[in-house]
Image 1 (cartoon, rainbow over the protein chains, first blue to last red):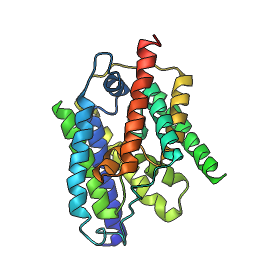
Image 2: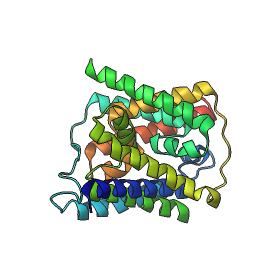
Image 3: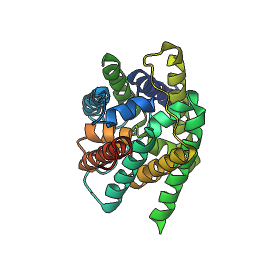
Length: 141
Length: 134
């Protein structure tokens, strides 16, 4: 099989799985996400299971996959550093949390919401990409 | 609750497949931003992944696994939230899938800190918005 085709087919399949997961888990619905974040209100802990299920699956899956020397259809694994903690990480995480708590969307669900609720997802995504672009610019200075 | 766990496992499966096939972290923020400011070779697989994400969501639309309340934030709130999410995830180099799923699965200290911070901040934000300052 042509490598590009294999690579892209796998990316498509992975994307589909991700979309299925976001929808089945309920993470595509801000009201559900905010219900999880609202610990003082009627707390909906189910998103803990989403994160838990995802992390455990990925933990074992990665252990198995990363025993290989290369991915199936690429020349190398691209894995970021795990150690260095800097101010940018801290500030970035806080700003992200602030935005997430405001609307209940993080990047994945916001994309998925394009097929659910364009009224919110479109302005959100435009602002999100603009925000990322600003951060990119700020990184260079 | 069962749906939550199943959904999480599917997200994990997605991350594992992407790593196995393409050698990439399934961090949505990185995938999206990379579509805009990467070389051409980097854009195609990202666009295809995003397409898959949309298809997966679309496929389950009729199923109604959840019946969520409709929220109506103001445009200002949406834009502010979006900007903060964009800026913050770019600055921190990851989001709930990048740091939260993939980073934690790799036992990354960076990700553990990022997740702790963004979860705590989000919880605090929701608390202040819904339950006030007192």
